[in-house]
Each structure stands twice: as C-alpha cells, then as structure tokens.
Length: 430
Image: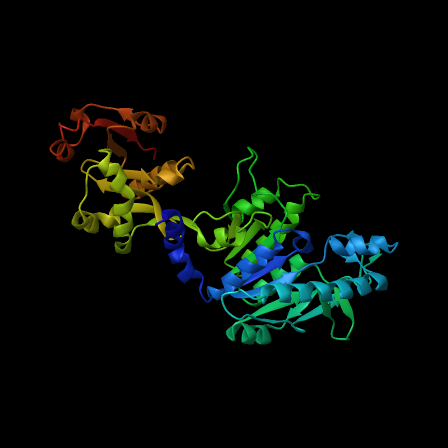
C-alpha cells in the first residue's frame, strides 16, 4: 500500500469534522475565469460542498470588464476603490456577469462530481449608489446596502451552493456594479460565517525578511498593513479581511488560486497554504487542563526517548497538569512548560518543550516569560532549571550556572547525581 495516499486522509480527519456544517464565503475574482486552474478550483469547491461545508461564492469581473470596455473604445476608471461606471460599462457588466454565472454553474455541476450539486442565485443583495465623492460621480458604481440573510440560509440548509454576482439592484430598481471584495466581506459578516476566503493571484504574504506569514491575529494584521503602500493590492485584501474578523467572522484566508489544491490544503492541513487572519484564538498560550494530559504526553515523548527530559507517567502528569502552561495551535499542543514551587522563594522551571515542527518562532521565550510571570504571582524570586542539553540557551535567557549546594534543601535531596544535569538559576526582577 502507498502510505503517501493514506496519511493525508488521516491527517485531515480532525478538520473534516471541524468544518462540517460551517459557513464559508469565497471571493472568486475575474482573474480565476482566465486561469488554467479554474477547472480544478471548481472541482475542489464541489468537494468542499460534499464534505459538508455551506458555501457562498461571490464573483468579480476584473480584469475582463475593463478589457472589454477598452476594446469598445471606453475606459473604466476607479476612484477610492469604487468604479466610475457609466451606462455603457453597466451594459457590458450585465453581459459578462451572465456569462460568468453560467460558466460557474456548468463547471460546478458537471458530470463526474461526487454527488449532485444544486447551485442557486437570486436577488439576495440590495445595492446603493456610491454617489458623488470628492467631486467624482460614480454613476452606476455601487456598494452593498443589505444582504438578505434568511433566503440564503434557507438555500444553504437545503444543501445548495449559493452564487452572488457583483451586480445588484437598489430599492428603486436601478442596477449597480459592486466590488466583489466588499460583497464577500459584507456577506460573510451578515451570515455570521466561520470563514471568508479571498482568492487572488497575489503571492504568499511575507514579512520584511521575505519569509511567508501563515497566520496573523488582528493586532499583527493591523501592524502589517501599516507597512504597505496605498498602491499595494495586498492592502485592499487585508482591509476586508480585518473588517470581517473585526465584525464576527472567525477567520479570513488570503490564498493564491494559481497553486493547485490551495483550498484543500488551507482547510484540511494544520499549517495551510496561504495566510490566515483570525478573530478567534488560533494559537494561544494558556493554562493546561486535565483534557491536555494526552497531548502533553505526546509532545514530550520524543524528548523523553532522547533522554533530554525525565520520563513522566500518565498518573504523574494528571496530578501535575495544573502546573503546566501550554501553547495550543488549533487543537494541537506544540509547546509546554511547568512551574514547581519550592521552599525559600525558589521555583523550578521544568519540562520546557516545543514541538520539532514549530521551533524557531520564539515560543520557548514565550513559555519562559509566562512561567516567570506565574512565579512572580506566587512570590517566587529565584527560578531554577536543570538541563543536560540546552545550557547555552538558558544562559542567553539570563540564567547562571550554579553548584548543587545553591539549591534549596528540599530540591538538593531530589537531585539525580547520575543524570549530572547542569543547575542554572535566574534571579527574577521585582
């Protein structure tokens, strides 16, 4: 048997259950209709539907609409992110919208899908004119006024996939051209969706050193946006990702649809394939609970086998679990540390461990800082650690090597002479 086929299914199992019944809004830009990966992208969306996701697709018409208008001798301009759409531009948009919708419906329901898929669309969005801003009349350029939640929810409840075009009518019956990014964001917020997914040709989000950023919380995302210029297309996507997460959407994802299978990899692997901005807690440093015992034992087992950590039985872990701080990454424990109070104002830092796949992200420092904060709250002013392998790292964190005689009496009696662990002590600042 080919294990490379089996393991991805097993690894995806927690996410299949976790995502089933969740509402996801996907922004599909016009670029995707020109791309060679659209066939696979539609197939993956159909697969997501069959795995139990409730899916709404908002689709745009750029760059095709400006190109068609240019071919007819016109020009579609934008002002502050909104189109300056005249009547001719609106006519072209209506025609292109119908073509895109028909093409999407055909690709999502073609023969060979795992089960029959019903695709629905309708007048679920009410538009309003952008109007005149800073002296610019946007004519038929519009923005979202209201999303009719109830009929969309009814369709999703009946296992329909819902399409929302970037054209909508106002209460007076006029049609307006919408921005699909705003449409997707407003729809996700109105539906209280679990996820907003923005697909684009934008490459991976990277930090100033050029390293990919796989996730950010709201504060990190806001700081990241401050580094972007107004002309950076990423700023536009980040704006709506932040808006969605600030208004109740749990997570926003920025994905490059040129990467085949990006939707499946993002949703059904732990580390994803793009950048996720979360309004809930994706990776958090927290107090351990009794439910964490199994995860803690799994985390420290490799280090115990190497002799880096002293072996702990399940019974010992269950009695000591309330002394642990853990880093929880989407349900997987990837870091831990424990604090054992001793006599005479001493405390011992024990079992500091970070999962091998997640080292290098300063998580060890975060755990140490949390343990020091906990020690302060307990009146501990001397923090002890015993180590056989990582002396240099602890020295870098302010620990000083000391003899056995400097240990408090109760800890001296328990010192294991056979392990010959280095003793390091750090005086905590008040």
